[in-house]
Length: 160
Image 1 (tube, helix red, strand yellow):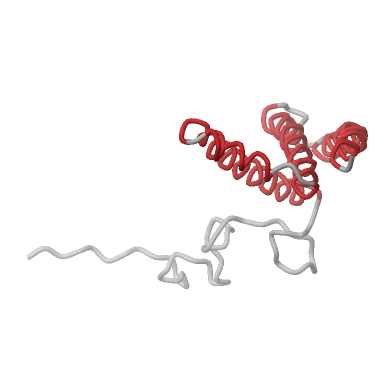
Image 2 (cartoon, one colour):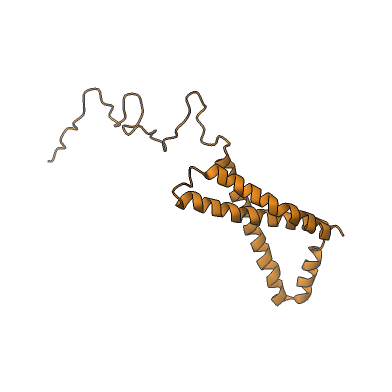
């Protein structure tokens, strides 16, 4: 018969290994990572800052690009199946609604690419985290500078 030695605990220690205040001994909450908050603010991870919104926009633009590529591959594959069906599908794309959708696609592609470069700089450049907000402003500025003339030219073709 084997016996297990009694656990050695400090007087007043909780059996779960937590501090008497209920916090984990490391100072972290046992259910997840430590979140630094300003005193008096509600406990939320998403406070609507520039970094969070750029993260959301990056995911949305990536999803748009993914679905565009999926549709593009499928409709291009129609050429091998039936050239007549391919021509019919291409004709349905020649309307103002799809022209405006193309504008959104170009905007999503441009933002996703520029913001991806910003994310690389934030991740791999020593000054990146400190300068993430000015870099986001630069991304938005370059995006606007490139999109304004493209929008005017493209919508001119769509609505003529």
